[in-house]
Image 1 (cartoon, one colour):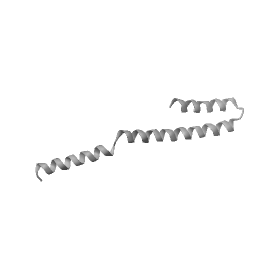
Image 2 (cartoon, rainbow, N blue to C red):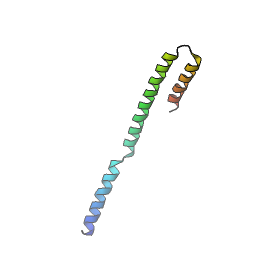
Image 3 (cartoon, one colour):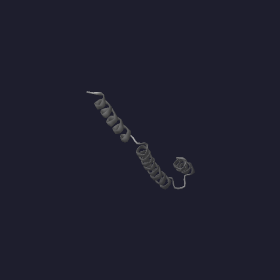
Image 4 (cartoon, rainbow, N blue to C red):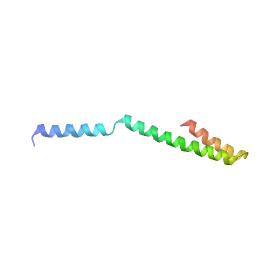
Length: 72
């Protein structure tokens, strides 16, 4: 291989690697995962509130879940 072939192959390889791991894609994926986790936690909160009814201790535990969602 001559020098030009090596440089061309290196340039192509570098461009493929750079395109495959774009920060916006990683950010979008992370935001989607966070949204899913928030939704699961909110569903758990609603379920626990229904089960807790008038039990203050259980309701306080439920409120911690709600606060956790809002701090994310």
